[in-house]
Length: 163
Ligand code: FES
Ligand code: FES
Image 1 (cartoon, helix red, strand yellow):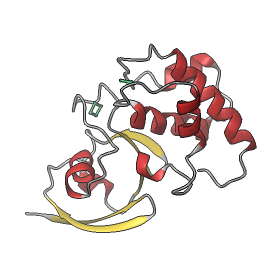
Image 2 (cartoon, rainbow, N blue to C red; image 1 turned 90 degrees about the horizontal axis):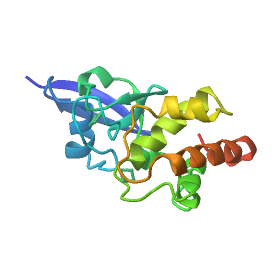
Image 3 (cartoon, rainbow, N blue to C red; image 1 turned 90 degrees about the vertical axis):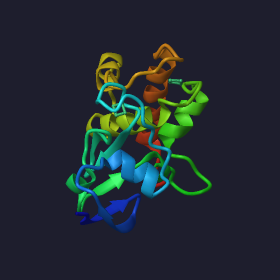
């Protein structure tokens, strides 16, 4: 039997009926076409599926959609400040060359947002620890760490309402 749920995703409210065993990742990608959030391992190991749930980063592959009922979700589609302007984290990832194939990027950027909200000026080891659950097969991580440092600087001075 399907359960009625309400999800607030990137500021929009969605009323849905979902099977109780379906994950938040499945509902985002398959029902709502929010495919920026990736599906990798399905077991909490790669971080590709990371989204913000009530202000904290979670693996959407390990979160049931019914658990997210009534909660606020931010996916990579909701990071940009506007259709014209990327979030400082997204800008920094591009500027520092921290994106290659891009598969890990949505999860990396959401995990970076989670870190920078808690710790606006993280040291390198704190960045590496915060992103330890997000795997990247392309970049070697150095440019991602540089990008998070750069994003922290941008967010310190950014008055444009970036979250
Ligand atoms: S798909 Fe969720 S952690 Fe890998
Ligand atoms: S850029 Fe390819 S997995 Fe990270």
